[in-house]
Length: 233
Ligand SMILES: [Zn+2]
Ligand SMILES: [Zn+2]
Image (cartoon, rainbow, N blue to C red; front, side, top):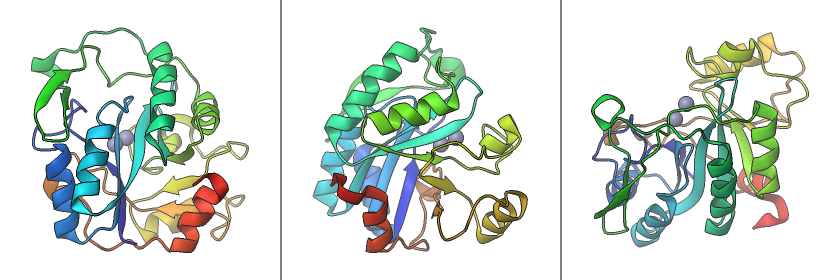
């Protein structure tokens, strides 16, 4: 399965308006992807619309979000049902500071329906740190039946390595997101306690524009997919 599990919709203020549910799914089909997830910053509210668009486009969809911990680390939560995504939304709402978004400065946070019609917007700024540590975020993702993937682990901004210095040995994550094989080798070299075979590696686009959605380059085997979800399907 060719995948891209880190795509932003137009609900994320930093993403382009063109990132509508149907545009995302149609572009994913054009690129030859079989499985996608949308991970907006600190929100799951666009996901039901994208899920409906994905079904129409005939691709598999996971419900995601990109949480920002109090240490300003980005971690993806991936869920295999709408109900689980709704569950973590309640927790996000209880941990998110109530700072109004400034559209002119940060960008729009638009909510669309499955026909790409604007039905509302998020009034709070989503680009904020939740009032929760990284390990609390991981624990809550698990409590809601999700899988936690440390996002862009070697990036210069908002990664576990820039914010904490390294990937903690005792953090109960389910996968690591890297941008290349070279980055994977670097993670392994600098973290002797991480074993290549025991780790689920993700190579996603983190697309904020349609053109940046991944090509059909990264293949996830059905075995890995099952290993990730185990008996929770
Ligand atoms: Zn990020
Ligand atoms: Zn992102």
